[in-house]
Image 1: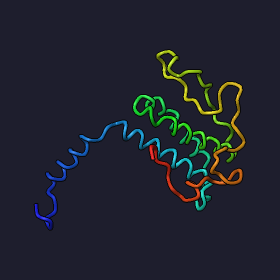
Image 2 (image 1 turned 90 degrees about the horizontal axis):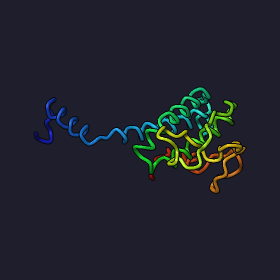
Image 3 (image 1 turned 180 degrees about the horizontal axis):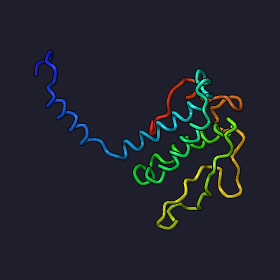
Image 4 (image 1 turned 45 degrees about the vertical axis):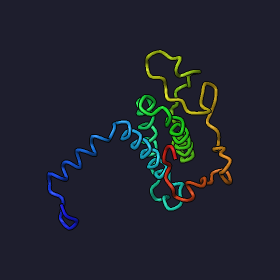
Length: 162
């Protein structure tokens, strides 16, 4: 095929097949979880320019969807679980600030590896037995309480491992 020729249908199909051979399900799972977290944060309407997109029902659905996928993610990409839990915690806090109520969070086991063969509940930092969600996040790089952090102010999306 020359530089000016269009690839044939067979060549396109072969290229597509080659791409599919390289893709792993855990890559797609991680990509979808990150997309859900980012979309959920956008639906909070807290980032500048997204106020008209505020939808607490969509935020709750994003939270519950990620929580449902966490057991699979724990098996497929355990190194990415903690950053995702942190992001979901921030999303849950934003949901509460929207007036969506306090999302149900199961108690956190002392050591998830010490649980039975069943999948452990999805823990959220700071929400174990007897603990409550803080009024506002405490990242050191955030400004006044309730202000978005630097990534939110810049409009960048969160990408695990970067």
